[in-house]
Image (cartoon, rainbow, N blue to C red):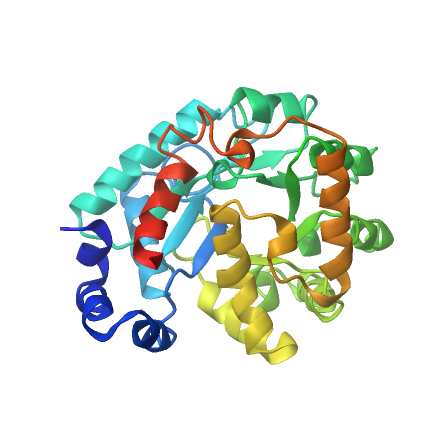
Amino acid sequence: MHRWAAIYGPWWAAKSIIGQRAFASAQRHVRAFVIDLHCHILPGIDDGAADLAAAVAMARAFVADGVTVVACTPHILPGVYHNTGPQIRSAVHDLRQELDAQGIALELTTGADVHVAPDFVAGLRSGHLLSLADSRYVLVEPPHHVAPPRLHDLFFQLIVAGYVPILTHPERLGWIKSHYAAIQDLARSGTWMQITAGSLAGGFGKTARYWAERMLDEGLVHILATDAHDTRRRPPNLSLGREIAAKRVGDSEAEHLVVTRPLGIVKNQEPSSLPMPASAETSTGVAYAYARSHTSTRTGRAEGGGEAGAADGGGGLVARLRQFLK
């Protein structure tokens, strides 16, 4: 039986019976391919799921929340969390097998919450650091309490190297107020922004909620994710975040935050092919076009594949998604 047939059962059969167009229309009534690109579900390797039982409980919570695909993005932080690309791939493989064995309909792909560090680009190219689903898109987490020096240079280096950096949860940074102009400039210069669903819900306090709402209102947010760590304190709550976002930016943009752009990332589409928030629509394409004209080096799948993509990371997920989306 096809993997997606096992997961979606009657929906898969309906695709063959009623035809592609009718199936696509019916499918819009369920949230197929709602994707969370930032969570800490891998057991025992950072401050997320403590063990396999906790990871499985999180997976069940994701499914109950309507999420179909999760990027496993543990911290990579020198001196604290010494995770590496190969270790993360292995952990994703093991957890995927466990979810399959328990019949939990959640797809996993690889990634990392990569903290700012020297030799960032070299780490990505070597496979020591991971991008999202082996794509050109990579999560970047700066220090929470102090703005790092030369942050613009790091993001520029990533863009010139062919990557699309995604700044994780800027609304929660302790220095956002004093450096908000710099964050606005990054967003308008090719860096994508990911805010946390819990911030919109007030789970991180009034200040984080204010900045999350302001960034949404200004059209600076590209991705909404959970940054889930467990099932209680920081649980999977993407549907709540999407609902709140829709009240501020409308249903269409809310869908782009959790479906359209995340799926584009998993499929490694160019930023210019994806719908952008209003204020970032032109500048992101320009910045990435500049990067492409100034380098011939690409990350794995940005050139059509590589060793990283063959290691059961994003490439395998894309193949499974492609089969379902035919």
